[in-house]
Length: 92
Image (cartoon, rainbow, N blue to C red; front, side, top):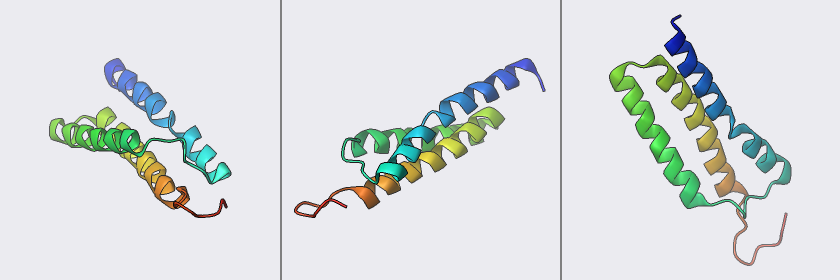
């Protein structure tokens, strides 16, 4: 593997795993009221577009990074939907 591809894969790994602690925190707390759906939703759309771009240019680091990151972000968004307090609902 050439050094540039390796650099891309390492960068992709680090930026992708950056959101895993948030997912773990969400599962532990079962609370996401302090997270912005607009921010995570916009980021997720950007990741989806990066994935499409990576596929279009056939870039392995971009494809791998964005498949993983998209999976983590979809999980984050699901947690926001699942754990978000409904108005008037008692805390869980």
